[in-house]
Amino acid sequence: MAATQRIAAGLAVAAACASSLAGCASGPEAPGQGTHGAPRKGAPAPGSAVRLIGDGSTAYTGAQPYLPRPERLKAGEKPPQFVVFSWDGAGEDSQKLFSHFRKVAKENHAAMTYFLSGVYLLPKEKRGLYQPPQHAPGSSEIGFNDEKGIADTVKQARLAWLEGNEIGTHFNGHFCGPDGGVGQWSVEEWKSEIAQAKQFVKTWKSNTGMKDAAPLPFDYDKELVGARTPCLEGQENFVKAASRLGFRYDSSGVNNQVWPKKREDLWDLSMQLVPFPGHTFEQLAMDYNFMVNQSGTQTQGDPGKFDHWGAQMRDGLLQGFSRAYDGNRAPLIIGNHFESWNGGTYMRAVEQVVKEVCNKPEVRCVSFRQLADWLDAQDPRTLAKLRTLEVGEAPKQGWASFLSARPAPAPKGVPGAPRP
Image 1 (tube, rainbow, N blue to C red):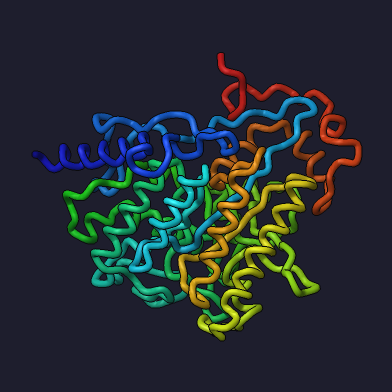
Image 2: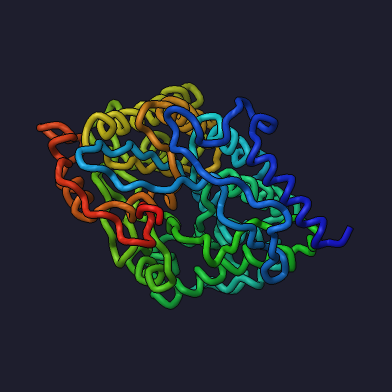
């Protein structure tokens, strides 16, 4: 069998698994289909649709499977409760957390966003290919990968995309702080970092020699529409660069639980402050921030406190969810890492939250891209009115009255527009 045929066959098998999850996971439904989850319409492209790009590291395989078609809110209609679970520096290692949370997502009608670090697809022998701004060539605060790690990460990214999840970027070397950190980078330096993050994804076959492996089933130049910066630094110049490069959203800041708005033509979908049980201050909805406020920079603190610390994160996220769900319905944005800090208590907490919230009525656990699609489909006047609601504030007169004005029809050609 020729290499291209083997690649197409491999993709077809993966696509078939994504489209018939009765045989690949538990339950008869495709991922995201069900009474409470956001429906994901469409089906995977057949293997014959594969068109390799460049060295074959990526390929065009048609529209992404299970991507829901956004609908414009009708007059008086209550907004869905969106929840986004996202992962910084997503990669598959010996912990197998990427594959685990793919399974958790499928079982709970969820789509997620995986922010892939480009250097996770660059072997350490080729580290010199990375030219980080303000640092020596081949530098990286998170290292590079080996062949097995790259193969495992590519496999998980491939399957995740075929299941309707999003592959974003967490860039490359993860430089933080005042000495050459991303917070000091110029717009042009950010453009270089973005270009390199794309390039490592688009050339992982050439850089590893795994010529016959199945490609990633998407054109990364088109699929990459959003990111989160390392340590939430450098947002101002990154957003300027990303806007010029056609990105659609950024998740690199800190927001309250209110409806999002645009910044430099990008949706600002930053993480939010949620209650921190047992404290008078609120906490960023991210595992790292809970950890720092519990055990400091010590990633393995007092084992006797692991369960308590995990419960604090779980309950804080659930309290943040409830005040939005019963209040202003602002999307809840949650960020995480594939980690084992404090005995893995935060991973267990996140999984509990997924299971608790994603199966509730009117809840849609979506990727950032899907949330941006829905926001783009709405009447700007409706979104402006939603932004007048404060944290946890439900309309006093009820949703039917609050959004009673008939929204303008969506322009032709945009998400949510009526079909011809």
